[in-house]
Image (cartoon, rainbow, N blue to C red; front, side, top):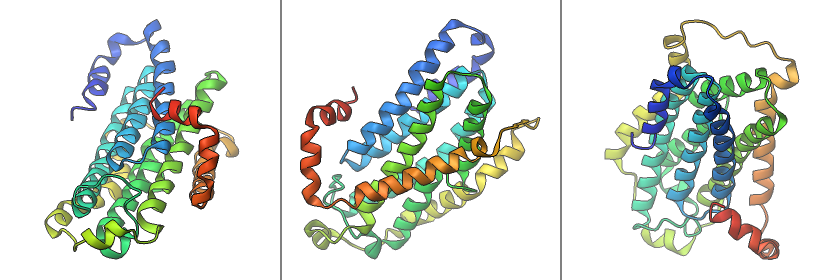
Length: 277
């Protein structure tokens, strides 16, 4: 609620702000926010901070589509994003509590063998966040990116949008590798216990919502159809970016531990990007 209060306020006052110069400034600023949050999430090792930075990236997406004057799209993305991000935070809370309050993802690994249902919820909500087809995030995010492709903006905004979408996939795959695919670490063997069945009730409800709420809301809240007429490559651009992000995230996560010197070579850049510019 607290995070999206500013977005909601701008949605409510959107008819007053329309055609102001402030909105052009806001578009640039929120596009840079998306990009910055996506890059910072890739350098981050704290589980909560990764999810918080991905929230910041989605807020940049909402603000930027709001500054183009499409307040209903921003509201649609606000609602769908609420579903899977709440699920994501609940899963992260279960994992952190299970690790006896360790938030560092380098301590985790092989979570999916111990808490399979929590891992299922985590992965599905992460995929919904990436805009995987027919999950909740796909409907809103794909519509937003297609409206961006329709509007005649300059190339920088276009690239910022698609690069931020790819970065979302990137840190999702990174999180998946650190939590699920990595081998057991010492902390995991000591601290794990079984599923939290009290939490799983509400998590399954949110899981069902983040599977179905995209199509449901797009029937409910749009009172006119959007006419989107794009060439095939531009129409499939979101899927291309998601696949490229998935592949690159896989490649980077597959680098073994000796590749740490690659990060030390660009230490100043990494530090700059990690500390949010």
